Amino acid sequence: MHIKNVEFIKSAVKPDQYPPAELPEVAFVGRSNVGKSSLINLLVNRKNLVRTSNTPGRTQLINFFSVNSDSFMLVDLPGYGFAKVPLDVKKQWGPMMTAYLSKRETLRGVVLILDVRRVPSQEDIQMLDLLRAHDIPPIMVITKCDKVSKNERKRQAQIISKTMQVQESEFLFFSALSREGIDGIWGALEPLVNT
Ligand code: GDP
Image (cartoon, rainbow, N blue to C red; front, side, top):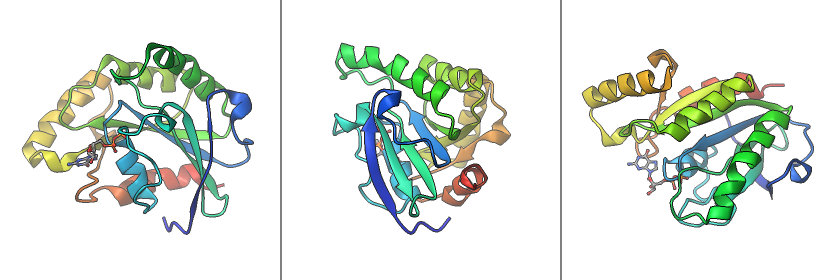
């Protein structure tokens, strides 16, 4: 995918704050610190388009970005499992996500990001259940692959596959450090955002 430009459109909590549903859209989600910002920034070739979790605020909102002069939309969904987030913000997360996933008619797929070194959490499993319940195709990305050996990656993929009840063949392996996997991820996203 050739990225000509990316523009931050707006942040939203509720559906009436979303930008008009006019463009095909893919969203990104995962537990805080999983590497979501790094992945999005690399996909669109921008160092700091998406802020990392070290900068709270915008990270607890749904952030909409228009790509290639309104060809499609990328959406950065708030990460989950962040201990430092205030309780009222945590309580907001569930309804915010459910509303987005159930009401956004232009949503074509959600990239669910997992850490190669971790056993998926209950929240990761619930996230995938939520996607399935709303018939939203999940794109399963395993990131930080530079942190483990090839053998370790294989072992972890088996564990993640078992925990998430997802075939290993569905996993896309990625590293923001080595840039491994970018083409594969765009390969999965392109058919979804093509109008
Ligand atoms: P977010 O909270 O999910 O948006 O996660 P970030 O993108 O902010 O990443 C969290 C931390 O993990 C940062 O210190 C990143 O530099 C680091 N990180 C993210 N992706 C990778 C990766 O693929 N490899 C390595 N080694 N570190 C990564």
